[in-house]
Length: 249
Image (cartoon, rainbow, N blue to C red; front, side, top):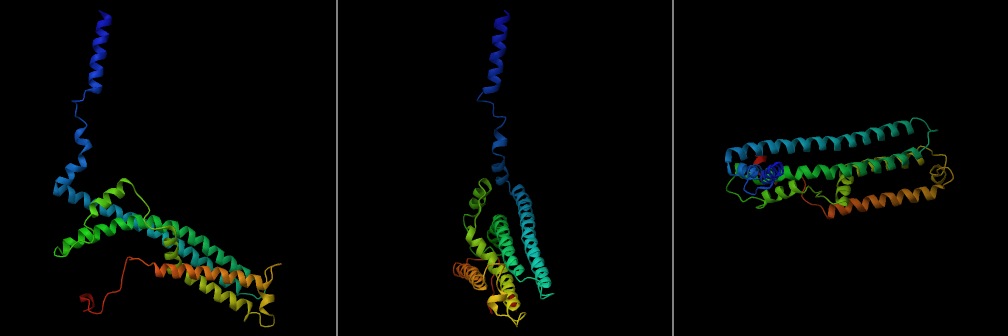
């Protein structure tokens, strides 16, 4: 009797676990579809989603700016110290050029992450809010909901590494590096008028000619990256308005 009772209990337990007719988990599995079919719920969730994405955009934008601030601060400190005395070595400006490359690498990585959230926000602004304010115009991306859905399921970086590198170089670090170049040229020429530039440009046992050649190669590569970014330039966050634009009136 005990054996048959245990068998019956095991049967009831198995039926409870594996009964295919038990659909208690069904509503949870399609809860997103249920919200999508209710306009009031969908609008409320869209508002929360937009604010959440904007918060991420703001946070990553702050990280980008923080990297740029550190780069500017360090370059300013180097320029002040190098030109404070003729005995201070000029190669600290070369070290500053290397530091800019490090900051650029960090900012490139942060920019790629920032662009993930920015792209989602721009899709909402271009294809949802823009149509809300002007429903007579066609939306920019008819498949915007599918694109956001796929990106939420499988988040992916959208900006190629070299493209992000070129953008940050062109907008921030190339001008800073030109300031360093001008300061370095002045430091090894005008600041030391009694010596030839070959002598003043030398670093320890490295002759000045080799140092100048290395700096020239560095800036040629940076210029090539900037030109590549200009040629392959894609749509950014802002653009110039035409002179006939109503916003200018």
